Length: 448
Image (tube, helix red, strand yellow):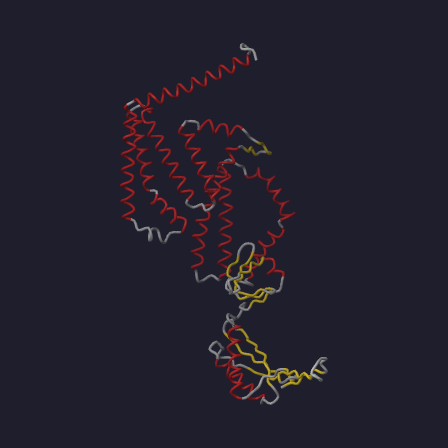
């Protein structure tokens, strides 16, 4: 490239401008350090840091963190505790803001530049601490921290306004909607804040509703779900309206969502609607003992998409709501918790069937969980090849632990039969072998 070509002249001009900018910045820093106002600001910063540290120690010694805001909702209680732990940063930021305001009114703005930088850094640190304390996702914590420090850095060097203008200069127009990076960032930030506040409000309402003894469990769950959905819709509407998005401009996305539901989200929508139906018709409710297919247990929770059935052995079955609407469900506690326990058993033909029935009825009536107002019943059901067959039935007040009740009664029956000399029939096999070797000639089964 020739030395005097236009391209070489442009490169030399750019290099000269860069060098001149660097030298100007260095001269500004040198002048700032040499100024007595620099040392005054530095002294104010050190004094504010000492006051903030002493105030933080005093606050922590006087505040009982275990009982602080104990009756408040959990998110607010967590927020207050984080504020107490970050008291030194908050006090330091307040001091810097006050000192900056005083110096702005008494001298030139450039003489309080360090105070402004310190205040912005303290506020950025406080904002990051407060926001990340309620976030459990490590990736989101990193994104929030990086965003906050980026905003603080741009504000400190005076480039926040130009950066905002650049983000707003690139746009994609869809109908009447103008999407820009700045608009998306604002919308995401407002949605996060709005949904967080919605979570706080809905959790507070849920705690109040669950304390009400006048509402059935299914109505409580239905009210909580309706409040959550309503608050979420309101939060999204307010957030989008606040950034200037006209909701009518989202008709295209609404149509696309409708197509998506028609093509691939039928099950999700079906489970959601089925969940509302279950809550309204009260066919199942939290606490009911149910059998669905091969799964039995007590309903521990009813969610938007599924119900949780605790099996009692540490397992929980998550059953889609649609299955409860379309399949056969056995609800042991739908209208009445009283449960009929049936125990079949048999004896040999030497036993007196009347005595057997009386023993079985007395044993069932003596069980502590047997319903006292309903007498047990024992009947002879069959004269079988191996002996007589009986059926013992009695009522208990709650189906919980029914297998244990059966076991207790059957063990008591066994002890009574041993005491009375009653034998339980079982097959006896007699094998005869001729000549001391195989083959086996006959196998005869003779009942005892």
